[in-house]
Image (cartoon, rainbow, N blue to C red; front, side, top):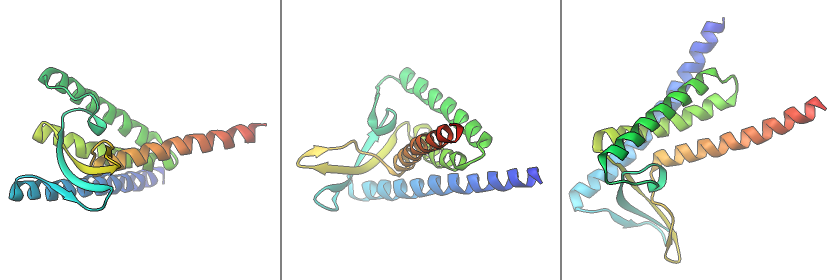
Length: 167
């Protein structure tokens, strides 16, 4: 019985991870095909949203970008280690956190694939307001960010309910 529940949970995690990964891949392939056919990607969608292709050699949102391959490889190894920790946390969770970890992992694997395949991550979503541009990001970054924000919310919510139940 427990083994069947665990198998079902792992299957659902796999579906979530696959959905995030493939949605990210499809969006990046579309943007890369646009760049290949037109030479560049600079598509204004609204007054505050553009698609513009930027190659990111750092971590999330272009932070810690380095030219040196040694630092790039160290960051990649660190990302692999973090992904393994996320897998462990996902598999040992007995509540909604496991699903949130799978959302984060799906996005992270999308960006890790790009780091290994292209040696950089294609970012293309550009939000801006009055010439102030936020970091350019991609669909994988959205999954990672939403998963982390939801995890923070769950931690705050569950910790408050646990404290009030103890009193």
